[in-house]
Image 1 (cartoon, rainbow, N blue to C red):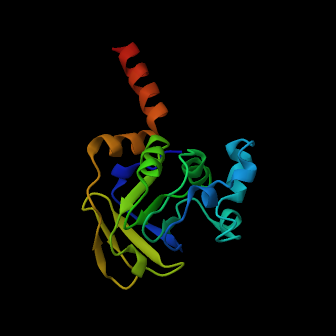
Image 2 (cartoon, rainbow, N blue to C red; image 1 turned 180 degrees about the horizontal axis):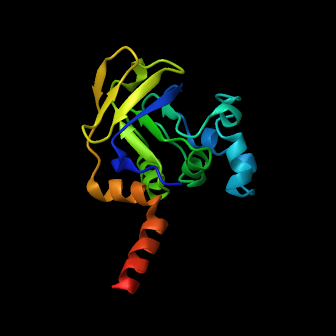
Length: 172
């Protein structure tokens, strides 16, 4: 599933989480022997038991600082992709989670004031202007995303991006 970062303006429902959400909350260790189809239904169950069953494609997560801390398990980002999460917005992310997320096509947006948004609020993302607008009309700046990471998200992750490049090279 591609998130198409270049698609401009879109509106999304917020799931609000606190700070320091770790990879074990996103992909619990007890389920790591399963495929991503088996892990995803347990995503965030220790923090928000209803999350995996109630999140809808296109919803966004707004979290506090240090989202994705903990182990380097890529299943943490993969579970969010599998559930259709459009983006995660937070003041900061774990470095390993950050790279895993983009490698898997999950859009991470660094928004220093993201935590002022409310649960279930509808927010508007303008990924051309790199702004986030709350339901009340307050506008927040999103930190710039390097073009190579934008392209990775557009392709649906690093492997899809490489497959696309190989196909384009074969037809050239």
